Length: 486
Figure 1 (cartoon, rainbow, N blue to C red):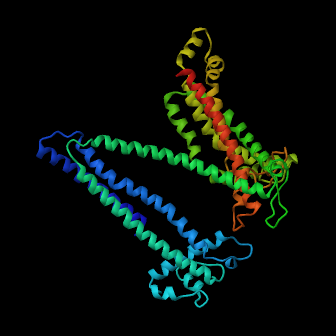
Figure 2: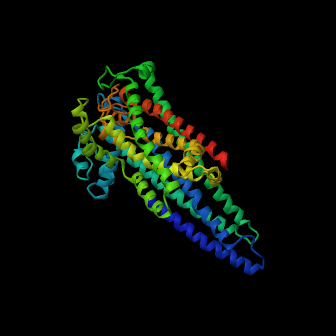
Figure 3: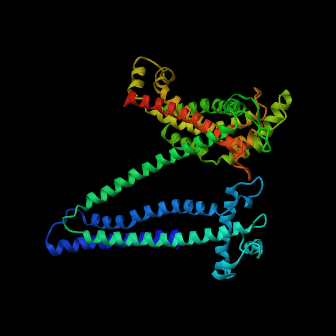
């Protein structure tokens, strides 16, 4: 039974529990003459929540735990001799999962039965041809140990899924019946229902926190593995980025940090003045009609996919800057450059600056403006000397949030700035950023334990620390601003 069907059955149990629970509460109240402690709907909610929540929690936990247990068991069945030279056990396990899925498809199509599958051996049957018929392509012959592991994996998954279905559905039905039998006029159904909802909210918050902890932990552990095989001093202070997957790599982060900083600064130089002027116009000069049209039109920029911005940089802006600026001045010959990516990225983050700054300027108390007007200040003088200084902390926070967005951008840099890691002041040269190299180092079937792959986690952790610092600084400034006027 698939997970979707299990969830659907549990949802049906919960819906039926809500209806019969509500009806039982009303019938008991009528037969005993006692007034219900809570509204009838709360009694139905109690049955529905007991029918759905515990069983779904068990389902989620089972889906996480079962693959780890099965893969741990199956991985031990594969000897080192079955792992290709230069390969990794994780890649062999990926083949095991694909073969297991293919065997399920073969059985579903009736090409084999269970007894034939149990007797089949990889060295006696062309497994690749059999799996190719159901759309599973393997790059090489399948060792018999891997094939046997795939059969065990398939059997374990099938057994685990069946046990999961039985347990989840039995738990759902059993708790629904138990909560149904507990219904009585004096049952504090509202308190039970609200406790469930409170627990759900706490669980949702915990999931978000645990996800963040998991992300940071994975980055820290893999970065530690990287620094065990590559010197941290060379990583942080070397000026050369030259990964060689066959050895002899130089993995200095400084060229990548410089490219990230340079492109982000160009983007901010474009976005901050334009975004701030747009915000001032919308907050202080535009009428209601103009504001209702201009602000949504500008915010559309934030909804355009970044790949579209990248194509614009690659096809339109890059060749224009090369043909009309760089080549006539003799400062560059490539359409991929820091200036190309920075300008397009600046256009993309204009809404971040303009919308946040507009809201912040509107939050400045009108009494400050009225006081300036009463002293004889003009509108422009009021904006320059009263409104902007009062809104400055919030505007700085908006700029820092936009900077965080620019630092994490990938597609625009790939298409607009190229992939060359270098230290240069020429904005018409191709450069790259940390995010681009994270993608490139993890692309393809590479040995996961090599420094050229693990360096992606060190790059990610460095970028995480930088963006986290910017976000914390931005939130601190915005909070300080809010406390000033609330």
